[in-house]
Length: 323
Image (cartoon, rainbow, N blue to C red; front, side, top):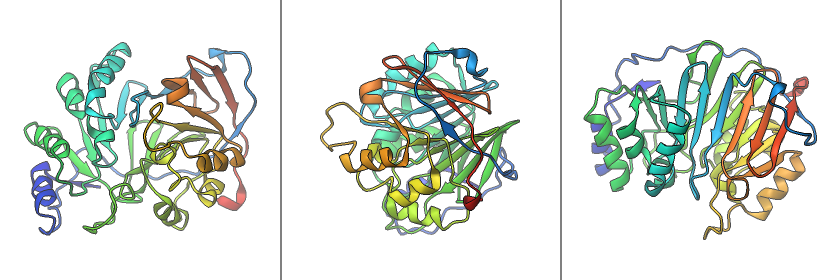
């Protein structure tokens, strides 16, 4: 992991050809070893029951329309991944306050597109943010420049990551970086998304950002573990991600699509939905289900929506061919 100054990134974003970012000592995170984690199985929907697990880790896939925002709560630690478009900022602030959140331990921007970082200004203004993780990709939009300027004017530690980096924000919780920008100035912003595998006990959640099939191919051959019970589907269900080979490696039981109702992009694509169905994953969508909440005790997990109720899942042995 690299800790850098947002000011240096703003300069790099503006000129594109300036030297690589100055590396600084990472003062907050320490690497940790990823242990082998068993995965997963699902079953058909049964009546709601919060007694299935203690819900020590809760993941909220917040309905922010055509954008992404996910909140992780674990044992007093709070992590926010992306924050939708700027006009969704107030709604995100309201959602977080309803969860009685005042501090955000880690704020993660997967990549600089406005539908992922637009609401960051409201988050930074309304909560005590302790650490920021960013892709560090150069981008000249006003939205991204303001995001970097706000961080630069504070004392918030700012870090970029590389594939293979891992950190443990709290005992028992591990986050592994599966993909991140490759450092080239012409890399597509979506393909440079930070992709994370969050692990608690035997339960794994894979956040794919907006990564496309070329990034998925690199992850398949990276040697890093991909198998995960829960998949935050890439790029709002775009046809250019969530490929069949990638799904064979991930083997998701639940697929979460963060997408806006009636969007102009045709997301989620029918081809993507068919690939997900063929993988055996149960599909949840923020455009039809609203905000989606996953609860897990590290041994079992459940997916809850206000419109469909609770779907509990149970763990099965990992696929030995993917070890």
